[in-house]
View 1: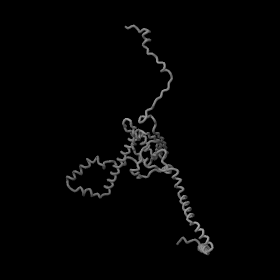
View 2: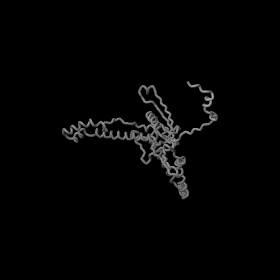
View 3: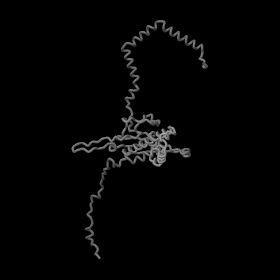
View 4: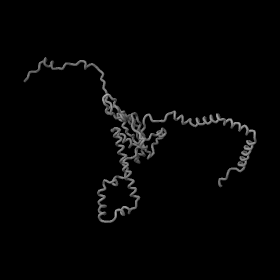
Length: 311
């Protein structure tokens, strides 16, 4: 057995205390920026309600969702490597907005709740893209809200990829539906006449259903994704309302035109000529003849009475 350590050895083995580490201090922590920043970039508020009758009839709940999205610079710009002594350059990624953000409604549309009509798509040269700033997202569909919550896990590029995937699947479904309508409208014996007769062809027709599991006809006839953009609105903040000066100019345009015409007529002497002609006509019998004819016509119509509705 080893002898227990002496008190001098135990005291010498202790670390030397650091007294300034016990003094109260202020710690400055710098949060990371860019993609790994802990800053909140989106907040959503959803309100849903249901009635007793709606629950009995199995109706969907009444829902409204409001989301505020803050798009940072690193989400819409891409930095390029620069040589030594040069300033770093950046370019816009040009990520297109979702369909509900391509059409900016007016203030009246927002107040009454109207959205774009089906089929109103912007031309390719007018496609809007994400930019740095704030956006307001409004929706009255609970399915759009559920999709919005799922997309909060992805960045703008992945959200754009998901939108392109939905558009591609919807386009394939529309082509499939057009083909089915053409086959349904065509005569029943047209396919048999083109196929011809013969046992080898009959065998090939029997083998066709077995290998047609991956053809467009085997796809379900239901629309793959519902049209949720018609029930949602995406607006940049502040919204791009027309300037006040333009609105005032359009409001006063008729009055400005009237003043110009009046000034031209007075400057050219047309107003003075009109006054002279009225003064000359006032001393002739033409005004009295006109007044007599009007009074006699009114008297005749009054004696005849109201017109007969049977005629």
